Image (cartoon, rainbow, N blue to C red; front, side, top):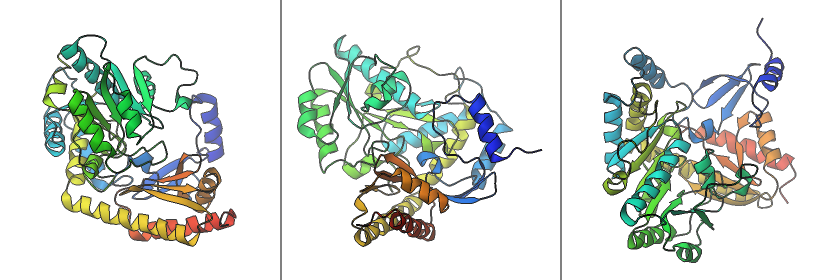
Length: 403
């Protein structure tokens, strides 16, 4: 006899590690923007696996790509070449303007490779001692020890101290603070073009461009973490296009696998030379199954017509939220973001609104205590956006947050 949702949750509490707080839903099916729980209730999913399911849930081409490649070749290790690996590397390097690609199994691993590359690059050119990496407060770069050491939120550090040495943090968007931090022991600056987990924070005008200029001047590598913002999320192929910069190292994940584990680290020719044979590797990264899927997804996302549609839908969504702010100025403090990564800063805690929206059939999450984050599939429709904003207005009014 099938277990009920409550029975499944009770079983999960017995046998799963309690390292995350899960929403009390057991999701069993997904199609497009919609998911269904074990009780058969439908929800509109504006989380999309946290900006991961670029084409929604279970698109036919994803299922077919995995099926076809699984029938041909699943895994051979990186001791050998495989064609999907080579073709995906070609696609991403040509699209990004970078020279070399390394593939791993997650965004955190992509960032680990970037951190190692930056330190090794500096060590090879300048010797020991030039190893400090500057990151931003409110940043998020992953859960591995290197990635959380580079993350500028102490809540992720607590209980895991000491963090790895050699990281300094400056306020995001504060150019004087960054400039002052660029001392002789710095080898790299690591930034998200838009901070996702930190509350969908966009940089002030000119900040990234001036950061890139300072890095070039001092031969400091600029690493951009686009695990959440890359591959169409902002309406461009990569978010750095909006800011007129070119990174030395770029990290990707999430949308590149649409739920299948994958990470990518792209780099200039000079930076990539640092990771010579034996300096870094992974057993499963670059396996044919993930690479075939990444290639299919990448080709579809990087299509100019598709990107233009994402930008259009993102503008419609942002304008809808701005109109709601004008209607409910006592409830909404700010709308921010680009494309289909949008944040809504409220005047009240976001948690109860997340719960209220779930009860109305919409899944969203809070990127910080007062910020709702919307990262739906890139294929979300204007009609679906309209349904969400109607539900959001109802939730805010019922919460008495309208002033």
